[in-house]
Length: 545
Ligand code: NOJ
Image 1 (cartoon, helix red, strand yellow):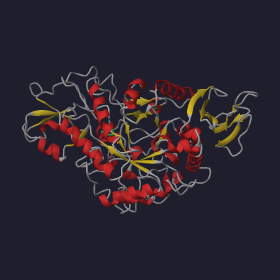
Image 2 (image 1 turned 90 degrees about the vertical axis):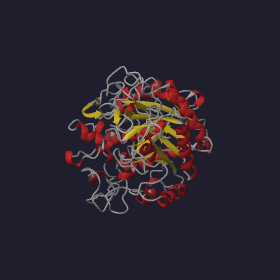
Image 3 (image 1 turned 180 degrees about the vertical axis):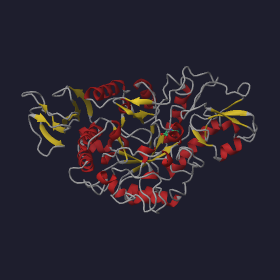
Image 4 (image 1 turned 135 degrees about the vertical axis):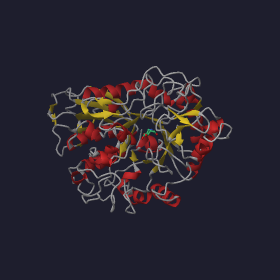
């Protein structure tokens, strides 16, 4: 594949997508909450077509719709406008235009498993069984005043809440303020399609589908086979907890129902009405096979499905190799991977793996050289770790509910550290979450040529100029030692080997081995040695033909 062929691939295949938690990115009016004008003012740092920006291709915004914020935007009360805390529709249009002028594609978060109970649909639906919106939601009489089954909310407790006006329970897979929508209702489906068209007409290039495997629930409301486990320790670092209990084994009647695939196929038809649009889905599951089924037969469902398997494995070459091989082996024909190391729901990789800056570079090296679309969570490019918060400052309902269990998500949502001032350059006011103590070390302004940020920018620039890395094929190979993760990326024009030494020890390269006669093209080291890899070194080399 030549550089031009790579350019002809869809944007969402070839470039880095930046995940911006808008509330924490940049505050323009001093109210302590990040907003759209703030984000627009920082677009040059994301892409300016020089090696001194991150060179992103796509920008995914966490939900910016009006919301009572019980779950910080994941409870939407109006799907067709912008929450005043983030700005106005004009601010949004300006963001789209400024992003587009820089070649950045915009992705909105589409949260349609549930709406806020303050959405006009629910406000009407709950008043009477005869209301025309009643069937937009999921209801049950229950038995003897008790919920109809054992379905649990992902945020704890029963998934059913009593509604006094109609004398029934309504379903909420998350908070009771987030009522599940009835995806068996064709009118509801049409509404969702129209919402997608509304944003596409405004210039939006794609959607990130929240809990996309949750949409349709078992019609007979049968019990799930197991009880929910709310959290499990992260492998390799028991002081951090993975809050992700939503597996098929546990939720056999609430997730992954076959009709959900029909709903996604319909949504894909809407996406395909306009060229260049895409959707990426959040599928939280246990096995690779279940996750990958959401690409759909012949690629008829999601364009991309997040691969979350790095959340649950140790920082070891063997573990990483397993994830990569399983993904590549099981990936359906024509499907394209999407890699994630951190997001707004899990402890940041820097804390999960206790990364030093050198280790953080090796993780950036991995994320940006794998075959597939890299999703970069804001701050990750700095090597930013989680912030720890005292109980009184917690905002996330999950953190509040389970305190002192470390399941809250505020730690990974702290303000972006732009500089070392009190508000981290994020705000002139009081930030909605405290700025991280490590902001001084990790701020954008303090980044020197040896920083994680400089490395990430340099690598992203290098990546964008090498079709083998953007759209080429990939195969894992044995590295010079067990601590090294090694793989090839190939396009017709380029053959590259990527070697990442995931260890604090130097890895010797045996004379005459395949790695010894490669030409280093790119490395974390200024002068990479032919005989060895430095601790944590990321090296990209041309492979002999
Ligand atoms: C998954 C989102 O990523 C998370 O932040 C949210 O709380 C739940 N879905 C409910 O929408």
